[in-house]
Length: 260
Image (tube, rainbow, N blue to C red; front, side):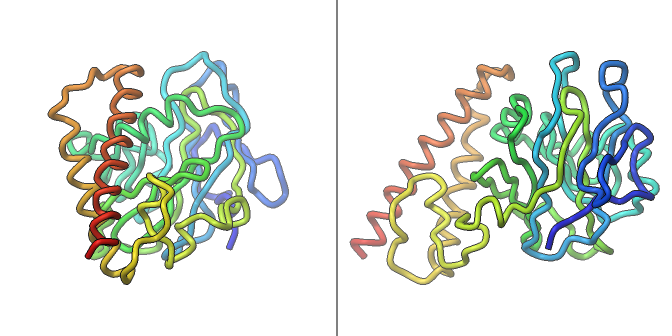
């Protein structure tokens, strides 16, 4: 299923330029950096990906696109100063993962923060709903965010995107058409492949996935203790360390599964 933008509920600076309502831009991008929240017109279903391609950017403003899901009142959410401050939402921004617009509950997410800071025209970015979790999508890569969605308090879930700061134009795209071989659409693929590229270890998926989750959470939890500087260069180093440690630990798990 492909999405279109909601034409009734959106920020006051958003305009849609095509009949199918798939292209959105922020008006007067050199004079204003906000007021450009947009929602999917259609509710998101489990395993669907809400994804945009960056079509317009400029270096005048700091800040960048914000994207996620919202399961509250769209009329209220569109008036938030930014998507990450919207109630009843889970939004990824350069600051991390924001839940329900609570500035005191922002989860560090170094990989996504650095990706959003360096977005360029032509990049693909989005989220996929996966039970109580989200996957952050960037081109053909994905990064899981575990247990971030309140499944007990959901109405209709909509995608939300904020054309904030340096990003002022996007187009809704179909992720499955762009990346049909992505592991997010193939339940038989080993999730370790996103980090290491080896063949799927022997064993059932219900055995492989919990190991991946444990490894991912262990590596992510260990990063703050390394005290990387909160700069662009620091985030790049953090991302390299994260990926190297994931490769090392998943390699060990892979060898273990082959020898067991």
